[in-house]
Image 1 (tube, each protein chain N blue to C red):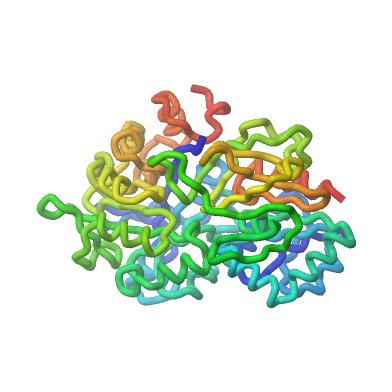
Image 2: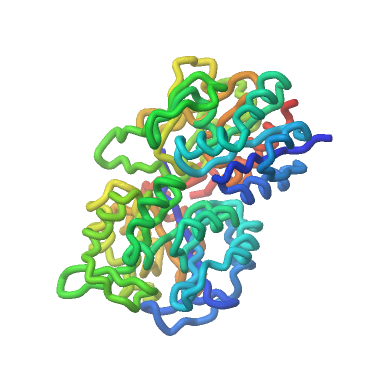
Length: 257
Length: 206
C-alpha cells in the first residue's frame, strides 16, 4: 500500500534557513546543509527546499547550492524558487533535484507547465499553490504570497493537473507558521478537485493536525516546517502517531508503536 | 578495472544516482559518450522524462547501439531505473507509440486507477514483493518500502522476466530481469538503506 509521506520543508533565504509566520517576519533557524544531513539521517520520506528570494530577486535558482545539498540527500528532493524556464528545470534535475516546484511562473507563463511535463514527465513537476481565504473562497497568490493572481484555488489546481503537473503542494498563507493546524477546508477543496496527489502545507503544529489533513482533508502527503524547527516533535514521532491511528506510513513494521 | 558508467542522454537525476553508487562502493562516472562503454564493468540507465523523448535521445546520441552491443554481446550487467527500466521494453505509449530498446519483452502503458480514490502519478513509498531468489533483492525483506514516482508501468507476458510486484493499481510489475539486464521502477538511489542494498546486489553481479 502507498504510504502517507511526512515531508519537512526547508525555506532557504540567502545563506540561511528561515521560517516565518504567514509568509512574513522571517526568523533564521540555521543553515540548509546541516538540516539536510539531519533529516537524511532521520530517514524522512522526502524533503522540500524552497528558495524564497530567487523569484523576488529575479534570479535563477542557485544550482551550485542545490548540487551541494543533494550530495547529502538520499531521500527524494523537491526544489522550488526562481524557476522560469525549461533550462532552469533541466539544470535543477542535473544538480540533484528529483522534482521541481513551480509557483509564480505557472501564473505568468502557464505553458511552461505543459512543456515541462511533456519533456521531463509529469512525475517531476509539482505545482505549488499559495492560497488565502477571502470572503469564503480561496484565491492564489504568487511571488511568495505578495501578488494576488485573482485565480480561485480549485480552478487553478484543476488547470495545473490538466497542463500536466504531477502533484499539488497547497499552502495556506494565513495558517503558515501559526502551528494552529492546516486549513482543512482548503486541503479538502483541492484534493477533491484533482486526482493527482496533494501535499498539505501551512499550519501543522502537532501530530493530530497531520492525522486530520489525511483523514478529513484527503492529503497524500504532509509538509511541515515550524513544527520540526521549533518543537521537540520529530518526523518519526509523527509516523508513530499516524500509525497508531491506522494510517499507513513507511517502515511501519520497523517503528515501535 | 571495475567502473559503473551512468548513461547521460540528456534526461535524468544523474548526480543522485552517481552519489548513491559511490556510497555503495562503486567507482561511478557519468558519461555522454557512448564510446566509454568499453571502460565500464556495469551500466546504469537512469531516467526522468517521457518514453518518446528518452528513446529519441538514446537513438540520436548513438547510445542505443552501444548499449545493445555491450549488453547482448559482452554480457555487461545493465540496470535501468524508473524511465530507464521502461525503456528496456519493446514498446512504450507515453508521448505516442515508440519502439524501446527491446532488451526485455514487454510494453509500457499508463497506470489505470483501480478506484476513484487512486491517485496517478503513483508517488511515494510503497511495498516491493520480490519473486523467489530475485537477484537484486537478496537480503531485502518482502514488503520493504521503496520510493516510486511514475505514471506508466511495465507489462510483460513473460513471467520469468518479473522480478517483483507492488500493490497499486492491481499489483504492477516493479522490477524486471532477463539474464544480465535488470530494471527497477522505483528509485534505489532515493530509497536509503533498502535502495543501497539493491545497488550493492547489482554491483555484485559480474
